[in-house]
Image (cartoon, rainbow, N blue to C red; front, side, top):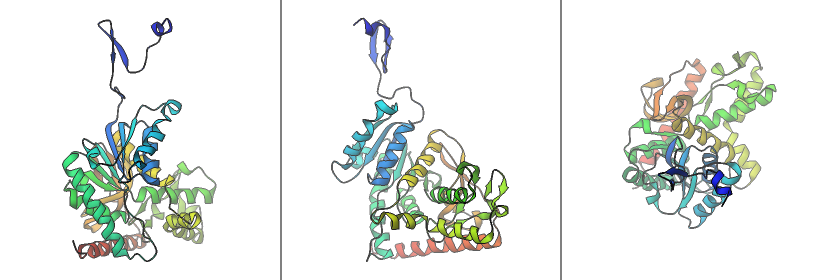
Length: 341
């Protein structure tokens, strides 16, 4: 008892001589609640990163598999005394958990399997997206949505269509991950710090992505002055195959460490109102000469979501590649629109 006189216990304060218990996480800055839809490797890893970054009072992990989100949430929560974060992490199997969310990150969906056509993948993931979007619309009408489910540009468009939010409040993880991979390959080739490499990967999150060499530099030095054309071409190609390279190495499963880091960067930009200029899958309304499509492009992100899309100058070759990337997304949207239901 003597020791208690000299300690101020977290969550309690003196008030009229009595000790009053505060709600868990009271006094924190950032978001109130972030919901991660999907408790797979990506969703679970993202929940861990968000908790450790203390970006919200509560992180909820949702999945339809009973015990999976609850188990991962508890495992993450038990690291709080070691790592020192105050975020409460919980798991749920009911979409009611979305209620009151400030940010929803959609990671749920199927990966394409042998024998599955592109139409099959689009249809199955669109069905998942529809159910989640309806829940977000009714239970978290003021939230910002970050879509991760692949094919991400198409699924972001579909989520926005289903939820009915303004485009500023629905965007997808796209170029943030691709750019991170691209920057690492450049840094590794040059033997420099990855943080000193800046640049963008625009276009679709897929084989038609566009690493923009003309806007890539190392501490201000243009990349095209540092590496020969054949080495640049090899880095561009490896960036396009970045996800597939990891799948081939793992044999089963796909990347989740770098993707979850990318997603956490996006949530942090919202939570801290950072006004970050990042490449994301964003709705274009005339920018780059395109309308009514989601595609990877530079955008400023803050507490309100997408503040603005930033048009950048592209070379003739980069412009042609970007246009082809948009066309590939439009073709998937056409396929999706023709599926029954």
